[in-house]
View (cartoon, helix red, strand yellow):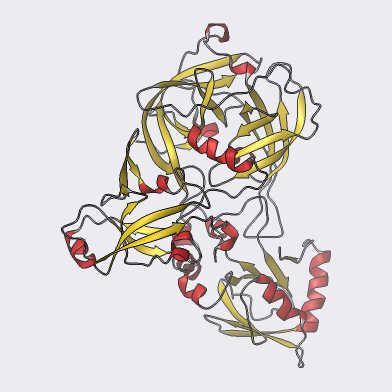
Length: 493
């Protein structure tokens, strides 16, 4: 099975599509072109941004003059535009709501009196799509004519949308699709109603992943009151209990099913409820969990337990967990919360905001993020600095020290203030002038106070353990850096 890639990269001209006049429904009457300009931040040179890149897709028209697209369509956007598929009328747009984990966004025109929606009919949602049924993927030709391609639903699963480690309900469909210039985001429709948004397509296997209507409905319902909370996360890593030795060790031999809790993320729903590593989850909200972590969904069959947390429930709900702890049964009422990316010690993703950093005399400090590590390429787990990769894999020791973020020295520019330190990089900062560094703001505050001897003492958790920099020389270097290409010496928010 070939891996699925972003739809815009892998659609191939493979199938014959019926002309718009022969279609049972009319795509050109309910979808809108979306034009975006994206500009991502640099994580290796945090004061810079990458080159602007264009992206084109299709959005589904919703009630209230809003357009639904995937969040990936407008990630790090600097400009958004809605375009009428037939008339070509255009309107500048803004984001009315976005969730990168659920890969959904809603756009609205800046000018509410725009003509861009003239003749466009909103789509209602339909959550009834099931395995074995067919749906239509809608596209639009350059001349505005609609094109509809039939796809069959093979199965319903749980999988990743966009953010690593973030999984939701997913339709797997099969059908041949055509490549078009606005094919990054495509609506999927059944009987004239929206049943999902196409996420990715494998031209080799002619299979695609579809973000389903139940997740769209939950996203829109959360947005309705103007305060978006987002989908909750449980915050545990699990292991199957297929091994008989593990089942005996955990005290569940003789029982059916159960999934082993390996780790519990600090501040997560599970942590706040008192769940601990070593617990075994037997059931969630009355649904028995098997030894692989699945439960029996009444319509979809075997499905990952994660859907019971990120789909069947919402933030603020209380879900009952039946556990085995130290061989004894235990019930826990887990109040579901969403742990935001900025609440993690190491941000798992970062969009629409730049990395936090501070440059002092040529020393470049940052808060560690997963995007920084991923900047080292596809093989970042082997290419990025080992100590930082390890910290991302096991943040608990740093959290127990009281850190809110992991501040590290990412690089050293050659300046009069950094002579002899040019080879130092990728070391975690522990203290500056005796003050413990919990985040980049603490670092800025520590450098703001000038020591009596004029020398700042910077301590690390690894070699070289400690360095000293002159305050006066460093501030002179800062002024020179501002004059020669680095326009901003810090980003603390």
